[in-house]
Amino acid sequence: MAKILCIESATTNCSVCIATDGKVISIKEENTPNYSHSEQLHVFIENVLKEADLAFSDMDAIAVSKGPGSYTGLRIGVSAAKGLCFALDVPLISIPTLESMAHQVVLEVSEVIIPVLDARRMEVYSCVFDENHQEIRETKAEIIDSGSFKEFSSYSKVFLAGNGAEKCQEVLPDDSNFVFDTSIYPSAKEMAPLAQKKFEAGQFENVAYFEPYYLKDFVLQKKKTNRS
Image (cartoon, rainbow, N blue to C red; front, top):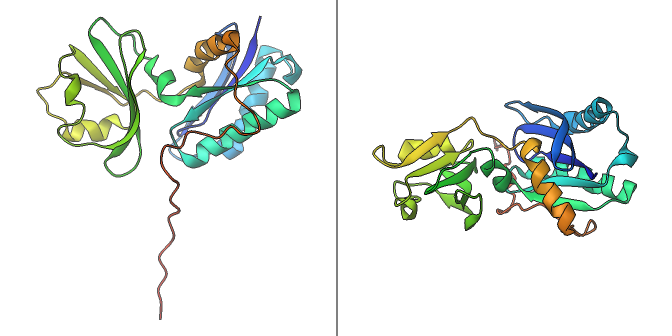
């Protein structure tokens, strides 16, 4: 029975769970407006281990959300996951953030889901999945306008889910097949079955060289200073 610790830190939701054979047995998460992963993540890890009555040494693998998402959030999550893998000598599993989000929506035939994460201004990170949650368009960082996602107009419904759905709703046509859901955010819960599949297939990352999938370069925002 594979026991996997799953870490999700790509957005404001700090989420950790322990899964046995793909089923969550303990979970701790908190979604706050401000990122607090540096303070909460390791506390949450200890909490889920205690709740599951397990020790670090019981873990068979560590799974982490690989991105895209917040640069700082991803760095914190991946650094914690890699540190645990080195210390415990267990494999590292990476889960695409948008894929785990897609699994939060049950789709009917001829429906698609597009998880969208806010990437500042009018830009989002997005990927497209069919009713079987198979990727049918790769992950992109794209600027939203009135013509976005028009290539999916033939589907009966197109679900736009995530914190980027609000900006999409502002510009996409009202008389379309779009359904908007801003309540969905990445969670370790949906990572569990995906991590189990990768564990069974032996799809592990090189712990030494693995890096988060940022998709865009990090831009440091400098404060303006008054010059005399």
